[in-house]
Length: 460
Image 1 (cartoon, rainbow, N blue to C red):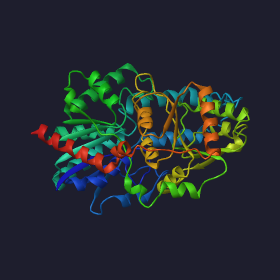
Image 2: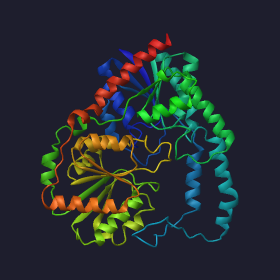
Image 3: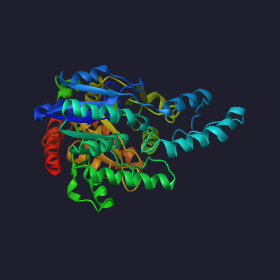
Image 4: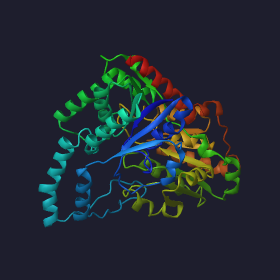
């Protein structure tokens, strides 16, 4: 069996959205003739941990962990301790706006303004390049080189973000000349959530990204739009280097769970909307709330509707959800174990999908990873956001209703429509299983294994 070194800073037992893609690939690669050996961080922050995720790996899987020196952790801890901020709720719950924070002129605020803020800007702009995980690079390269030689690695696979993973892989490629597959889950320099860094840094990162794509033997993207964007940006590199392996769902996670039975056992007298995942500040959530408030004000749905939020709701939204007209219609249950989260999705009358507000270049190309588990549940999906690859998946699955983010009236009407269908027992879903099953993780891993073989051929 051939051996692949998987370079992934985010990997279990930590539980972030970035761990599932490399985890599922590592789980199924042995079935396609590849033994995964993991290179990840040793001292990962312990806020979000789930040791059970490691149980999904084959017992013989080797995990090599390298220590990371990260100044950002000390900086954040000190900053949080010195400058605690109390968010204030927006004035109008119906039309929520940015959260305003009262700031008093104190000695600490002056220190913050004239010392820590400039220091933070400098470190983020010039030290944390390409990201704040760069402190992992020295020992990751050392441990990776040692593992390649000791385990006789046949191929290197790196996945980003963080982009430091690709820099580690690039150095290992230059030293060993092993075949290399670089996997981009998000754009790098074209990522819409990047701060406005100085021009000199952007120029350096553009060069670094170009070097990664030029030196990698195969480049993988999670969607067609992002792949095409990379082809156009780096037109001097062969477009045949870029390939697509989407994210997906793992059928094993649904084993023993019958969506129909779970739904009937948990059926309520009210419309049960469920949102899974983080609700970000930059999203379609504000307009969804406006539409929801309008539906409640119409008296057409009375009090028989509830929204359950599973996952992280950032502090900006919590005071708003705690006020009327939302207070009596919202449950914030926080993070749940993965299996319990799937049960909550299957018990929903309707699953909410609130799009992240990317910029104009990328908003139609972003495919949120959670969409695949949502469609696998077979429950109706109500998506609010921007038309693109994600909305296309929702619609082709046979489960979804898409509403543009700015159409508050249509959002309100759609909520009322779902309510009426639930009252009349007409809230049925007809999944397109032939389409949905294309996104099963095992099959997608088989696609990745083919690109491993292609990378080997190109490296000869």
